[in-house]
Length: 183
Image (tube, rainbow, N blue to C red):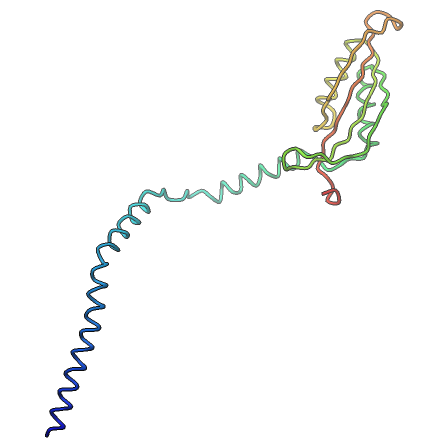
């Protein structure tokens, strides 16, 4: 019988110890509940302040991809330098200007910011009337390669050729997308 009471006493003490250990931990966790509730409320308010994502994201992405493709196509790949010179000479002839390419440089790579562009530079001397030279410059702007830029222009009157005749020196640069091997 003594053993029975001893066993009951040990079980009672063990139950009280377990209750004390578990109850203290539970009480400690219960005391942090208000602080956690405050954090949850703050997070819920921040979440409520975030605007929902637009529903037309797929349309905007498709539009952006189309604009990117158009921008990439605006800079053609490198045409042959012979084709460029031939185009410029045909435009000069159509305008009544005599043009002679003087100095050409091979394609080079230039950086604008972080973007790389292939650039072909040449110098052209042109002779003709002022009106035909003006027409030639307009043809270069509208009928030439879209990325052609006149970087320098010097015009002088040609007294030997007669009135109204001028000689011009044009520095021209043509920009293109670089070949993959150039990057």
